[in-house]
Image (cartoon, rainbow, N blue to C red; front, top):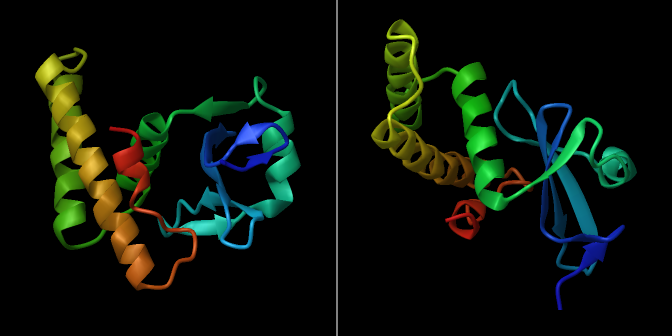
Length: 148
């Protein structure tokens, strides 16, 4: 049986004041909250905002599907982080598509939107795997598979 916290099925994915927050079950039967650190792309413990997140849905807090959560995390990582390597090359690909659409004053084509969504799902897994190797306890690359 899946765990619940304050009526929220775990895992639960949120956008809290435009910051991705996830609530997850822990191996000991408890739960943990993690929020995205925009400076590093990693996860910060967020148990201190758990009640605020679960009790404020509808104000500045929104429940999200796993897929929408992944897309939001990667949009923020792509916007705020820079570096070298394959993940950042893929972020640059998305940035180039963004710039082209903006220069032409248009929305993404269906092909561009699908490409961006697929790239973000892939970069999420790559970034989360890097975080796991570095010891980030909040990292979970399997979320991208849950949203596909």
